Picture 1 (spheres, rainbow, N blue to C red):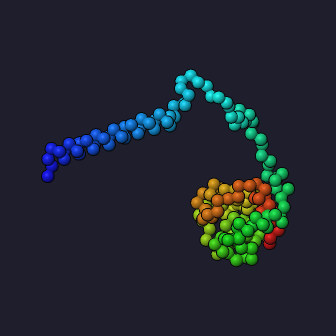
Picture 2 (tube, one colour):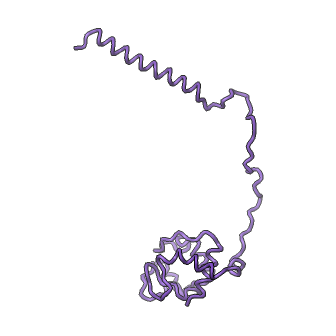
Picture 3 (cartoon, rainbow, N blue to C red):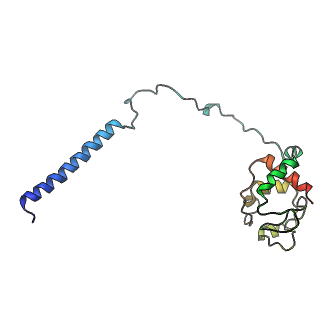
Length: 171
């Protein structure tokens, strides 16, 4: 079955295949070199300005809560509430989340019959002041680690302030 001629053909095929792969690798390296392209000692032909050197030395201060809240628009907050409507109601009935009627300046974990997380039950002596709501709405899990609220938060400060202004009008 395997005579000398067959073994010679197999060995020739293996060596030929290795030669093709080696030559292909050499050609690919020569064509697609990532070592600078122009050889050693050549500078870049042009510079692309990314603005990284013009970075401000001090970060601009964000306006304080009172300034943001003073400019809040309750009508705009009503449209922001659409993001909350999936879990919260304004008709006095609890849904997936507790109802939000009169939530501004209401005690935390105060909706009777709703099963709050342990962390919010621990904050029951505190009230939902506009400042507390503002911090909670920015990052619920950061404000109350372990909360059952799955919402990631509202990153824009004007949306948070508008929503709080709207919720203050809902009794």
